[in-house]
Length: 183
Image (cartoon, rainbow, N blue to C red):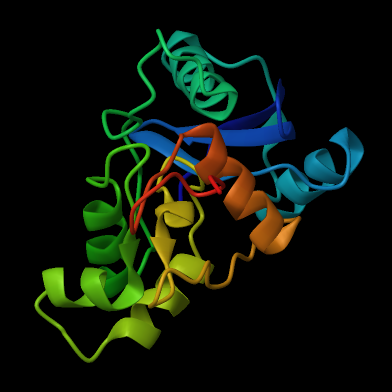
């Protein structure tokens, strides 16, 4: 991916990272253990690129990501409008990411449902692998895809399933009846 630069920024979950190029975002990073670890992860993911102040379009993306992670009810939290540069992303993964981006905040699908919507009903495991390699979380909202029977499934971001559930709670996700953490 032709990345020009990256930046780190604070969110309610911790310090996230974002990288950009001439054709859109080339990567987004959910928080590591601390700001230094997120910065180190970004430097490793985008070798040869420097940290830089984000240009106006990336500042807009950062504001939208922060609003999503805050669960701010008056801000738009749908990130599907943010341009992604998927150069180098395998075609199947691109299809998974594009479909995942259509899942509105607060809604969920299972890996199997997403595979069926892709027209590949036997590809639930491949969908999970694509989401595990997601270089754009949370812009590609892999946290909204769950295991069958309302299980959380895996989550490769730092904090694992706890982070996934926290993000769903922030979005006031509901599936299978009452809210995710309602009694």
